[in-house]
Image: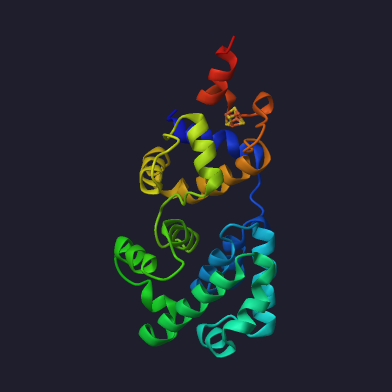
Length: 228
Ligand code: SF4
């Protein structure tokens, strides 16, 4: 069995994906609205999904989750609503600029921006303020627009320790490598399962290698065992 399939098979026996633990997925399942998913993903940068979800709910209650509602509310109200998600000044600025772009260039509907070739859509998204490769990929994978493996801190750490990717590799190199490892229709699931594993077992500090379902496949673990 190919390594990607075997990793997925093992992780699937270990974890059930709970949508509430992934703010972008949860928002997608609740709304099917790409603008909301993009807002949720921007809010989740450098914070927990729980904090991002709370900020998203507050935004919705305080002003509504549409580009025009956010624009109308203005910077101060947006900052206040999303404060609990951290980096609220820069995130508020990004949300306002993204909202303005969607209103002025895409008729107020983010779907209009997501039409066409997936790579071109990705480029378009990454031209938005506050939207890097990871945020664009989370939106595209979550909405089923592109089959890719968004690389967050957990995905990177677990993949590097297993030996699938080099530790210092660029975002794009890691993403491309993981697209080789995981089949087209399993990539989003691989992203979610690797996050679950990184949160619970393959933690940044003191990973629980002895109890890890992947340890027989893992370079980091093999190296640990070979140490005198
Ligand atoms: S064996 Fe250790 S380092 Fe390897 S994946 Fe499991 S927890 Fe992570």
